[in-house]
Length: 157
Image 1 (cartoon, rainbow, N blue to C red):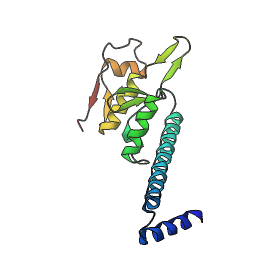
Image 2 (tube, one colour):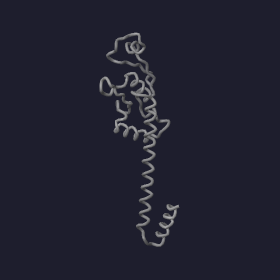
Image 3 (cartoon, rainbow, N blue to C red):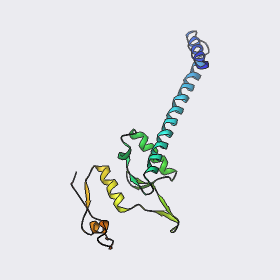
């Protein structure tokens, strides 16, 4: 109610050519309301993205593509930027992030599993990958030897 009266007075004052600064105040208020609303929406998207990350558990590796169905690209990028800045997520490599897990024994953040990172990278680029050779034997539990290099084969798409 108060806002509509304010808007009406502003238009009347502009038509009568007096108190023009009053209409500028209205523009400033409308600008403030719109920018505040945008900030609120960004924060809501950031909170929703962070909740989805937490639901997938510690050391989950993800990219923007994992959120593309639910959010706009600028919301995802903005959220990743600020979540990383706050220390809630860590950047693994360009476009690939993970939800860090703190080890009480080591007293530091533990890096995510290589297999999780490989599959996240494959999801990001829409590849189909499979572990190869010693990597496959280790992942399947047929070998206790940890490979020096993790090798995955791809369909190339």
